[in-house]
Length: 210
Image (tube, rainbow, N blue to C red; front, side):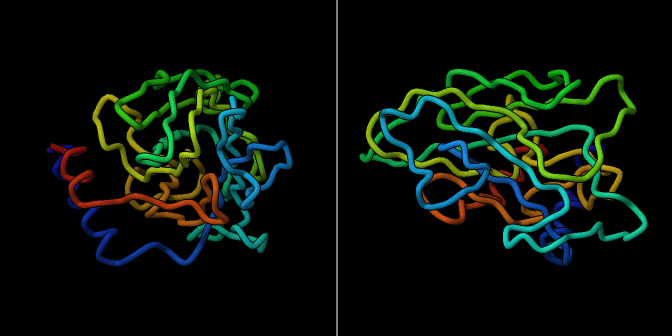
């Protein structure tokens, strides 16, 4: 029943589209704290930083919660990343190092095919970090050729953390107090391009909630 209700919520979210507010999650390969076309994978790259700005969109303009009375704080985060490239190269995901002070792992780092995921929660439970721009952590990897990385919205495999997003005092549309990429916000940037791709397909949603 729980999964069925969640699925109905996902269908409703797809029908009405994302709310008119945004946050921004992005990857950084060259320690600039930004995501640009210079952030491209090569065989010399062994680490990718993942950043989240909870209260600004990709253009730098401020964003607010759909309920203006609620802050876009953060008390947890989840990351799903997909590697692609076909004949251009490959990626081996080696591990994740958390960068958020006081956060503990709740969904272990796992790899499923060309995807990885991990989830972390601020301790003690109930603690909250104010809205802002934060480095979530660093993904260690081994690269051959010139593949690319992008964020996934929902997990394509049930062994992975459920979604890319963050827990917040701001109301979410699919997972309660969680801001989910592809539903509650859309701005994101992967490697090798100014804007990474968000993957949200009916097949993945159906598989996730079966």
